[in-house]
Image (cartoon, rainbow, N blue to C red):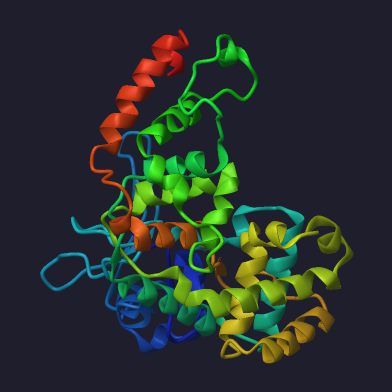
Length: 378
């Protein structure tokens, strides 16, 4: 269900209370009731389908307490869900539950200093007509369309990611995995990591992958355990789903990183907080506002920088809630996705991993017994 909708008349994203208030103040005489207005005016803020139905609050007959929030439903004439299958509001049986929804950020949910600054910059942008709610909606549609246009299917086990990491960055002179007595009691011990270190000896050719080539360079990032776990999670979630190649966004990603770096230099607290490109890369809010500025500038870095200067030099916003502003970072998990896509490129030249899930489970059981781990710790 959609809690907010995009109003074509008021040109912003609004919840029920905001939309009804504007309707009563401005256009109630022109429509046969609020429900008719919603049906003709409202669009899904993500996939832009029309024909919304307003669904009022639900209350318990026993306690009279609210048990259902007012929302908007988009249905076809036959009663089925009208949202596109890649829309996060779609609830049909063929809903695509991929990681793309990670890109959407509700600025109101986080009270951090960075988020508050970004929220203020977005409000200034709306107030000073640098961009508007239609631009924000169009950017979200652009990303939804990208998701829907995908033609790649990740076909390998998520365990391949961590197996590659173990093959590249865990060395042993003995040529085989050896159980170290008492290691399970050491800080940082992880049985899954030990399983990958053991399984790598079943696939010795993995260590022959040349990491010095330009094409394989993304795999160098597997030295980061955090990134490897992130890539593992994304493969687990998106395996078998039709996705788009994130590497198509490379030029746009580099432009967003450049603009974000420039923004950090404008504020002392950002300069102290973000000292490396990696620290900027991990910040969704900062990349979100950079992406928005670039989107409304045709992805031209110089034009986007000029728009940021307008926001930075503008007075504090006097409309701190210019509708329901939801940001979007289309570059979220970008480095992890570069690894995932490169592995998919190589998969036909790699060993047969068709039994890897079963091998992982069996080896984990074996090592857990050797390390005398309790079942509740496995």
